Image 1 (cartoon, rainbow, N blue to C red):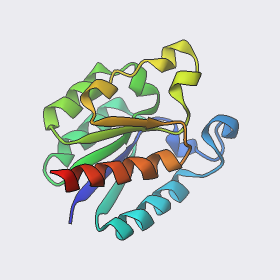
Image 2: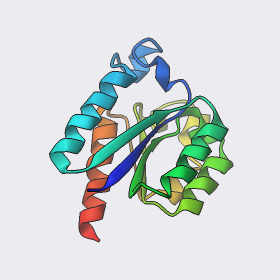
Image 3: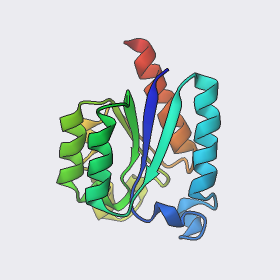
Image 4: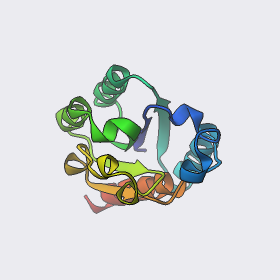
Length: 146
């Protein structure tokens, strides 16, 4: 059974409260429950982790090297600024799917550039909580294609 790190970046702990017109009304716990249900259906396990700290996110990626088959990552605001997160994803060499609740390409110009996307196997954005579920499905399909 494949184990998958679900990585939630800064401010995602405020989902359901924070700008619901952009990020939706579901809480992070609700999204994690949906992921857990889908993982059981797909025959994988998910391990959700959230941090507002760039360094902690990097540590979680490094630790995943020892136990995870892949990563579903919503780096949130760090998507657009963090070379260090990009380098961590590259260093661990785990297939990673980048996900975003909102369509980053319909937002402010600074949000339209992802430093992480080029080192991921794919990116899914704009589908709210479904972006995570689509990302998990895509990652499992990637495993099945190997």
